[in-house]
Amino acid sequence: GSMRAHLLDNTERLERSSRRLEAGYQIAVETEQIGQEMLENLSHDRERIQRARERLRETDANLGKSSRILTGMLRRIIQNR
Image 1 (cartoon, helix red, strand yellow):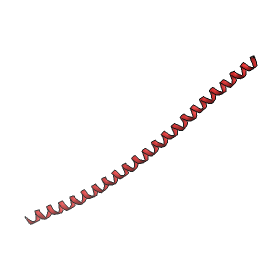
Image 2 (cartoon, rainbow, N blue to C red; image 1 turned 120 degrees about the vertical axis):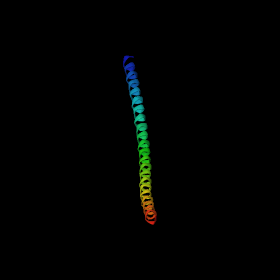
Image 3 (cartoon, rainbow, N blue to C red; image 1 turned 135 degrees about the horizontal axis):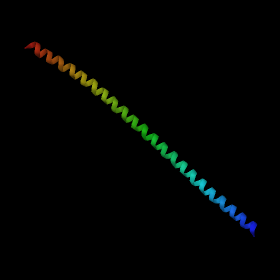
Image 4 (cartoon, helix red, strand yellow; image 1 turned 180 degrees about the vertical axis):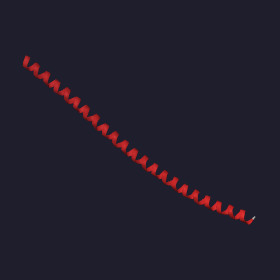
């Protein structure tokens, strides 16, 4: 009977190891999915930031134009006094 007990013991140990490996694999897969989602989110954030920067540049350019126009108008008003 001792041989049989030994075999059962080994089989049990193998099953336990196999379950642990499966759990480890599952964690690896989930971790990869989370990493993928994070990368996608970062990519979207980057696009948003770039768009916001572009809008700021346009606003800045428009403000510069408005400022030049106003300066010109003021100059004419002062000259026409």
